[in-house]
Length: 113
Image 1 (spheres, rainbow, N blue to C red):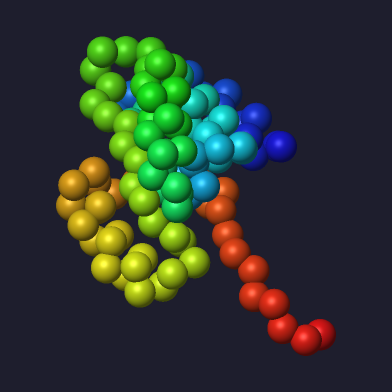
Image 2 (cartoon, rainbow, N blue to C red; image 1 turned 135 degrees about the vertical axis):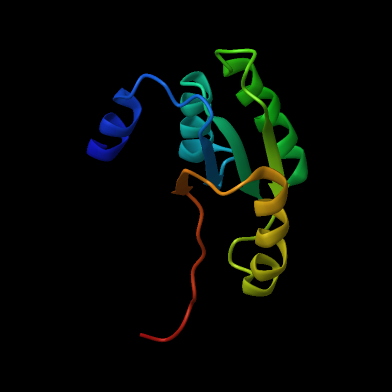
C-alpha cells in the first residue's frame, strides 16, 4: 500500500509507459486505470482476450489527455517462459520499453512439501 500511495502521488506520467501483468482485472486493472488517469500509456497482459478487450476499453475512458497514445492488451500467459521470450521483444519494439512495470499476475507450482 505504501508503494502504491507514493507512486500515484506524482502528478504527471505523460509520455511514460506502464506495463501491467494481470491487468485485465482486479488490482492490476485498478492500477492501469489509475496510471492512465495520470497520463501514462498502458500495456496490459493477461490470458483472456475478451477480458483484455473490456479492460482496454475501461482504461481508455480514464485517459486524461488527448496526447496519450495508447492502451493495448496483449494475450500472454506470463508463466509460460517460452511465450515470454518470444513475445516480449516484439512488444518492446511496438510499444517501447516500460518506464514502470507492475507485476500483478503470477502462477503456482504444486509439489510435495
